[in-house]
Length: 95
Image (cartoon, rainbow, N blue to C red; front, side, top):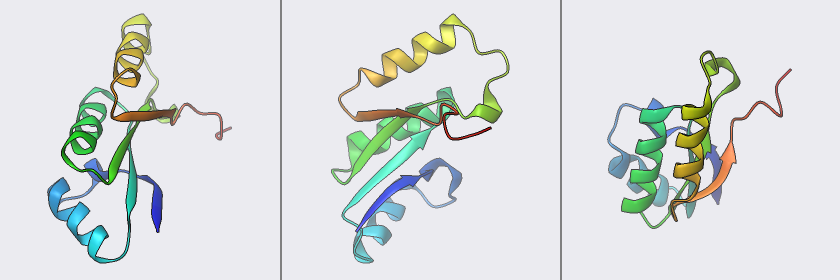
């Protein structure tokens, strides 16, 4: 079982506990999404710390106020991290 889109940063327990619980439930891969600077760092950190986790980096369309060249650079830098596997939450599936 693969969780193809989750937000570990939106959950109370630490990432390690969440990953353990998912593994115990049969989830073998987790893609966690970072949608701003802090959550991108957390997603990359979770992916670095847990073999089952990969990071998706981007900006949620509801969080785009003030999006500028520095924000784009942050996403590009994060996307170059080997733990990042996709750029997402970019609004392509939103109206």
